[in-house]
Length: 233
Image (tube, rainbow, N blue to C red):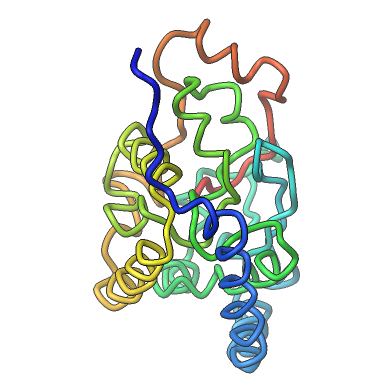
């Protein structure tokens, strides 16, 4: 196999990207604090106690961190005390928050802390770590992002395999101009509201893994295969 040639800007990838995150995320957190407060009050009023959804997600190199989002689902359970499927727990208000990406606002704090970047592969479920092929696992070579190349090229309307191809392509092509393009395309996506859900699912179907199991185990054997239930978006 021919050696991979990265077209990423090494200086921007190592230093500039973090500087851009702080330059944009810190002021945004302050400027949007009234909106964040209003959304928090609305979530409390419409959905009850528990404004924030906090869950362990894999960051750079698969290291876990706590991601923060506004809660969009009800905690409705069946007679066996098991959570109902996502589509039965996602009310109209939750759908609105997701369509407008308002549920992602608390992740600005993750960016300021250094857990995430503004731009990068989305942080998915911890249980997925053991299901990636070695190539797909490369998406964890950089910090996860609030938005990313896969999100502006289909989001939940495309297959998992295609998402991971786009994520890895981004890892190999990180640059200031590409990040600026993704930010612009993200704004357009918010206006058009495309790609919020996959056909037949409230958000996206669970990722069950692709490729050879032996290959997946090479990258995921040391990671937990189970995690608490929650949306992978």
